[in-house]
Each structure stands twice: as structure tokens, then as C-alpha cells.
Image 1 (tube, one colour):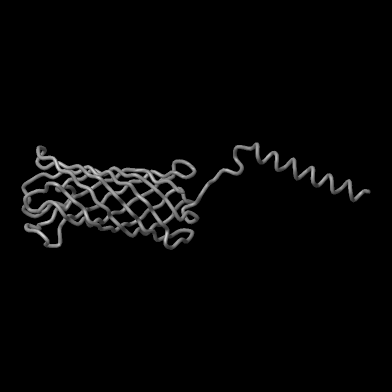
Image 2 (cartoon, rainbow, N blue to C red):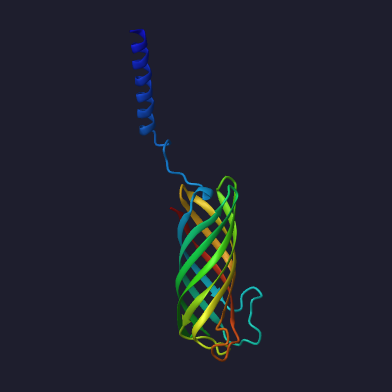
Length: 202
């Protein structure tokens, strides 16, 4: 009989404990770490110019400004506690202006590889990114033929956690446009770009 009473006491205590956990707003919150998350999505806005911070094209006389609207999907390939390797898919629609008067339109897809370092218990991560992909651009400075073109990108960035699954993203770097000599001229366009955005863990 005493064993039966003891069994009832243990069950009651466990039930009470579970009830408290369900009511507590601090227990059971889905807090994901970067090393536990295989899939991420994001959106970045980028602002670029051809003559920014030493990335000026040689002998270029025109001023080229571009606004980038980039949707992002990240897929983890290698995951460790403090370091990871990720694939990045980046469809985008971009709008530009040449000499502040001629408008340009661009769309394309970049595929890249990103190496990430997780710091301060996943509060911050820093990363390096290289990517490339086919684009279509309606107009370009005179040194470069428009239409079919390739975009090559070299960026470094930092993510800062602002909520349990959401990060701010800052990504400066360089973009190079050229067409692999499919059309003449193919002088290339080098653009310094700063991207601002968000990244969400899924």
C-alpha cells in the first residue's frame, strides 16, 4: 500500500512539473543555433557604384549605379559548432542608372559557396562568399555589351542575431560583370556593393 502511495506522489509531482513548464514563457522556446540549422532564407538590398573604394574600371568615363534586390536560400553542406560551409542560391532583380540619366534593368541567378564562423555563442557570425551566375542586363556602360552577361561576386559579411531565429546581415564586396567574350566589347564592369538584409533560420 505504501508503494502505491509513493507511486501516486511521484506521478503527481511529475504532472505538476510538466504543467509549470507549459505555462512558463521561457521554457520550450524554439531557439536554433547556426550549427543546428540546415536551411536558411533571407533578403538583401544592395547599393553599388562602379567607382567605389578603389574598384574603378580603367579608363571608364561613365558613372554606373545599381540597386540590387536579392532573395536568398542557404543550404548547409558541412556543420560544426564554430565553422560551417554553405551553398547559396540568389535569384535577383536589379535596377541601375548610367550617368544619372539612362535606366537599366537586370535579372539573374547567382550560385555561391559561403564559409561561416560562428562567434559569441551564435550571437554573431562572420563569413566569406564567392558566387557567380548568368544574368540579363538591358543597358551597360559603353565598355561592355548588354544582354547576356555573367556576374562574379566576392563578398565578406557579418550576421548579428536580433531574435531567436532572425539575423541582420551586412555584406560589402565587389561584383564583376562580363560576358566571356560572347559579344564585343567585353571590357567588364567592376562595382563596389554594400548589401543590407535579414537572414532567418528555418
